[in-house]
Length: 513
Ligand code: BGC
Image 1 (spheres, protein in one colour):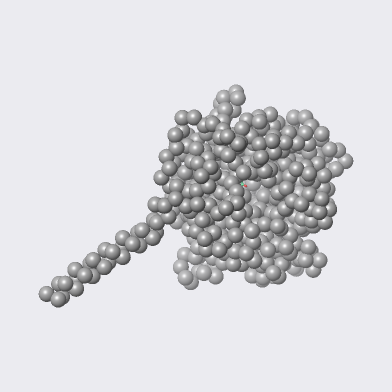
Image 2 (cartoon, helix red, strand yellow):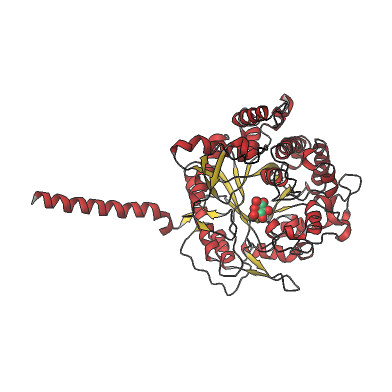
């Protein structure tokens, strides 16, 4: 009898534990969560992805014009950004959409070759400057804060022919460009981002073929690019700090891309950390760590491999002491673009062709779990807990910085009923709120993207927009997706409610916007 009673008790206890556990795991989804006071919301785009007008009013060719015109079908749908969303002419409609959403800020980037057609400061294209003045003034008219990225991947083609980011002279060229930007727009723009995603610029553009200029000079190109880019970033930071900040009082920082890397099992914890060092640490360690410089493990691994491969020096270039000091601390915030996560395990035999590469230097392989829900992009699966872990990692390893989420978003193949995107946004915002509750200093969130746009090598196939763009309509009509209504509700209530069902019949501008 006692034995039977014990079994029933055990069953009851485990039933109770199961149900409370489920409640804990699912708890947040049943309640409405408030965002911290002062937390800001925005959306983002980038010049080449939306502006179009590729050769209008004196704009010169950039590396994406060059790549798409000379090798069109390198892009999935053989398309290009010649017209894109024609934001060069339709920026007022873009700002109207931002007002519909009730955004606090809009993050966009400037086109170097639109402002400086020769690439250099000898000739300033007034029409290009006027376009950005118009956009900035339109934003400010409606109290939408402009967050401006100086460089989002569209290098002037002429500078590429001079070696692009592998030529150390680019530091001066970039500084000249930045100075002209600050002189022209610094009175109204208070948030600056020097570079968008150095890793994608260098690793994909110089060490691979997946971004322009698609040089594929593995194990060398991406490291030279990384060094010059960091020096250029820091020099511009210091110039802003000394010459413009006292006058205008703005903030300037960098945006890094970062996936979370989870070890496949406990024994791969070190391998997973090495991935983070190679992907994020390569840029974050020089800027945000106490010691500065490239991560020690990276220096060690690349030097070792280089020596065994017959190089006379490490393929990872060295910084001077002065450069280390100049770069250290050169960001007022940690701009983070985060989309997804990976699982890693140690694998020393990546080097099939006996050629150097940064993947071979790293000696770790990674993959995405088939259990994670998919988007339209092969590299993007939904892993909200990875976002939480990455935010904690950044907080713990890089001096508890002010983190601004400068991009986060989900791709589909189009359509207005984008429930998968809504689920993604909600789950990621939930994870971000968990991280904030657990001490991370995250102060703003940016949804990628305001609207569909030219998704680089994927052309117009993969869609990231809160607004759908109809590329077959002469007007490039923008229509809010269901996710736009949900994001609007999040912003207006400053809260996250997983069960909110929007009325998607009319999108309007609320009072005060
Ligand atoms: C880039 C965007 C891009 C987005 C989605 C980010 O890495 O900054 O330009 O469209 O990811 O792929």
